[in-house]
Length: 265
Ligand code: IPD
Ligand code: CA
Ligand code: CA
Image 1 (cartoon, protein in one colour):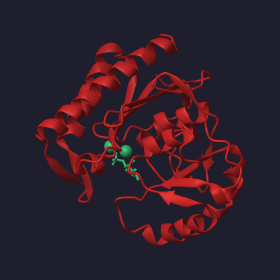
Image 2 (tube, helix red, strand yellow):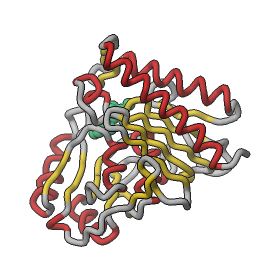
Image 3 (cartoon, helix red, strand yellow):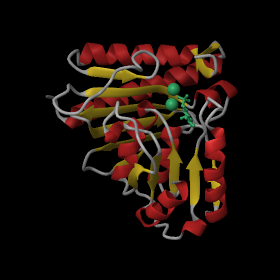
C-alpha cells in the first residue's frame, strides 16, 4: 500500500484541479442547475467535478473504493479489512456556488479500515487549501493551524447548518434556540466542510449539524488534527463506521464540548 504522503500529494492535486474547474465555471457562467430528489440543488459542475475526481482515482488506484455524493452515494462501508475508501464531495456548498457566494469547497477524505487517514478541503473562491494527515497536525495553505482556546461557552461562536428537507426543522429550531441563548452567536455559512475547517483554524469555536459522510469526511480529520474534540450529540445510524458518520455531529474546542453536547440533547 502506498504511503499516506503519496495519497496526500494525489488528493491535493485533485482538489486543486477541482477548484480550477469551479473558478472557470463561475467565470464563464456556463453551468446548469437542477434538483435531485425534488428539493436538493445540483449543478452540472457538481457532476463534472465528481466525474473528474472518480476517474482520476480509478485510474491511479483501481483497487480502492470510492464513496462519492454524486455517483456512488449508496456505497456502504463496513469496518475491518476493507480497501482504502475515498470519500468525495465534489462541491460542498452547492447553493452558495449557484448564488455566486464564496463559501464553496471540494472535499476529499481517505479512510482505511473505517479510520480517518487524511483530508483535503480546497476553497477556490477563498484561496484556502486545508489538509491533514493522521498524526501530523492540520494545515491551511501549508501553515499549521489549531483550534481556538475557547473555554467559555458564553463567548463561543458556533457554526451550524440546516437540511434541504424541511420536515426536521421543528426538531432543529429549539436546539438552535438553546445555542443562541447560551453562546455568543451562530453562523450558517453553507459548507459543512468549511465549517469544520473554520473550527480547526480557530475562527469558530464549535460546529454541529447532522450531515452525510461526504460532507464531513475530510473536515473531521482536519478538525481533529487541529485539536478539536469530535463526537455525536445523539443517536447515529449503523450504515457507516463512527469515524465516517455525520449524524448528530459535534466538533468543538475540548473545554466546551460537554456543555454543548448537553444543550443539543
Ligand atoms: C451541504 C452543505 C451545507 C449543509 C448541508 C449539506 P452540499 O452540502 O454542507 O452547509 O448544511 O447539510 O448538505 O449539498 O452543498 O454538498
Ligand atoms: Ca456537502
Ligand atoms: Ca455536494
